[in-house]
View 1: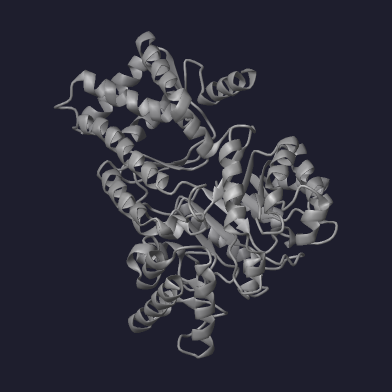
View 2: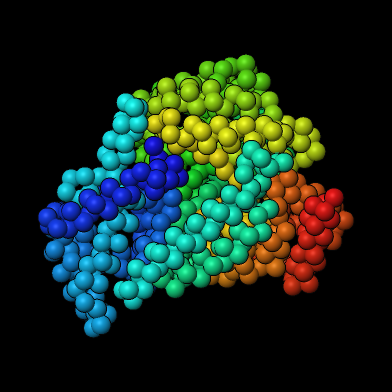
Length: 143
Length: 403
């Protein structure tokens, strides 16, 4: 299952589960790994233009996601808390964290990680969105 | 910025729901006919709202250093004479782009950050230097795809494609059995296409199927999907048929045909482990003013075509570099150029392409506007000529639409 179908299916069935997986992973400090082989390019303002590995469609990541992708590219796999501290350090270097608490930063990071996971850019604790979709497809068939 | 980012996701969801509701006002089976995106006036307002929100949070394809993908018509020569071919009907010359020109173009595309390149035509496999072209593109970091009728691809050819580094191949298949496919594309072509797909799969080349829906074969789409599933295809695509002449109108499927086709896709999209896609060829034009160009298409003569369905060009790569054209109007062509903005606002359905084509032929034959190798190059037109062309297009589309 790919493309628009997959995104609609995720919206209908999988999304609540992915949010739970991400929050659980964050709590358990699971490793987040960036997958290889997808197309992407950086814009001057920090945005990332890419093709989603799941949908095959153009995706524009905002500069926040751009920072996360850059950190993940450097480390390949990183624990959630390390990603959070790396993210905070990057924002601080850019002079953007003065008014932000850790809770807000963490919320931002969760949103960004959710986006990257749903579009197939990262694995969380060895779980990928493709495997998740396949599980759902099997469940649907067995019903 | 951070709390705003959280509200962005909520606002984004609200606008998407609004968009779904707008589409829901045109329920497929109860409406009198199938609606195209250009006919939903509310959609433009929603797009404008979405653009404003996404621009604020920099999640929009705008003010970027180059397109994401590029289609190149490497040749207009073809070994088939399909009755619905728009390129043939538009009278595009039988020219091919030279290998050196393609290499130079690949250099420039790579520099602009283009990620995907599609080799189109015509039939690209008629080129003897195709493998060199693919390899050069790959070496430049481009993902090279190809659109083909598949009739010339055998076991050896597929191996050479894989060795050259092709990323994916889209093969045209217009029927699930020889009698349907061959009636449209020529005797013996079905068997050759199926063998081509099997060969491509043998070398693990990602393969898509495109299905040209006409009134002769539209009912066979479910069988084509069934066959594609057995062949291990990952995607089957079809779209509204684009007629370019009065003769081609004879093949136009009825609204009832389209309703049945779209309903079948909607009902069966989760039943197959492949993507079923139905496209609206007017979509890129309707949404054009709200987004930067995602893709550029270049004809074999080197003309940049904002839409492949009309012979209106915006500059030629033999005269100007692509990056120069990108910075001088091409990026926002459907927003900033009078002619293309008019097309975007007045175009309603795919049948309107034919009206524009007939108008351009008329303007060229009466020598009202200058032509270049069958194209009208809008980049070269004076402001007065652009206004004249805009008014003519608006007049012809509005007049015919009102009828």
